[in-house]
Image (cartoon, rainbow, N blue to C red; front, side):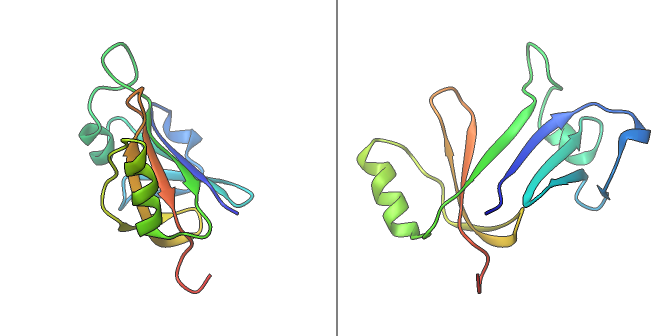
Length: 120
């Protein structure tokens, strides 16, 4: 089972391991897990707001794999607890493209609830 973590970072050019310039991020793998590093001076980084510090955050979102993934049941469960959930969208993650739902926790962190890729 994979998971991934995305964050805003400031790092030197020589530390880049696996660059996905088109998406504006660097991806690191640890087993089945995926860590996205978003340079603060790149297109995605600038869109994320201020770099880490008093006015900015260094975590874009974190992700939990949900199995089995039933979008209607997930929305109903969250709604029962007063949690607003975003729409189901197809997003890329540690195991490829699959359905996901974004929610925001009480501290303002974005949490992705991710289903398996098609055919998995």
